[in-house]
Structures are given as C-alpha cells and as structure tokens.
Amino acid sequence: MTVIWHPEATLSAAQTAEYIRLRDGEIASESFIEAIDEAVAAIKAFPESCPEERLFRKNPLHFRSVPIQKLSKIIYLIEDDTIYVVDFWDIRMKPWTLISRVLSRIDK
Image 1 (tube, rainbow, N blue to C red):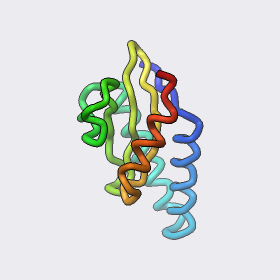
Image 2 (spheres, helix red, strand yellow):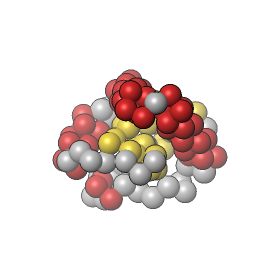
Image 3 (cartoon, rainbow, N blue to C red):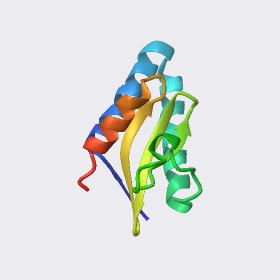
Image 4 (cartoon, helix red, strand yellow):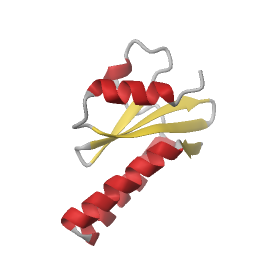
C-alpha cells in the first residue's frame, strides 16, 4: 500500500508536533511523531482495521480514522492500493470544522 498525505494534513501534523515540542519538550514531540509513524505503519498493513469515522457515516466515501495520543486523529480514505491521508485533526476542534475541511480536500 502507498500512503499519500494531503499537504495540509502534513502541515497540521508538523504544527502539532512543534506545539508539543514547545510545550512539553523534545522527547514528548519525538514520542508524538513515533506514534504517528506507528499508526501509519498499522494503516499500511491493515487499512480496513480502523473504524469508519462516525462524523462521516452518511458520506459514501467511507472515511476512516485512527487516534494519535488521545487528542488527534488521522483521517484517511482507501482507494485501490492507495491510502489517502486527508486530515490530521485535533479532536478538540468543533466537528463541523473537520467535516468541511475534509470535504473541501476531496476531488470527488
């Protein structure tokens, strides 16, 4: 499986890691990045093992999500042999923010 990150999802993950570095230090930031890497490896190995994201239940595209250290989620789609990471979401944000952001990033 190939994993393709939307540029904004990559930016959001990097900004979150930097925030953690400034707030909690380098070790915490590295742990956060390792958690992302582990989640992506799990998604690559078993892409359908993560549940469909409940905020998108009515959407026909079947977005899935995997939590990262309780406060973030990777939101992704599976198409053929490709996993598209469409968002890296801080779950403290309002749900409609995620929904509008994700749907604006889809070319369908």
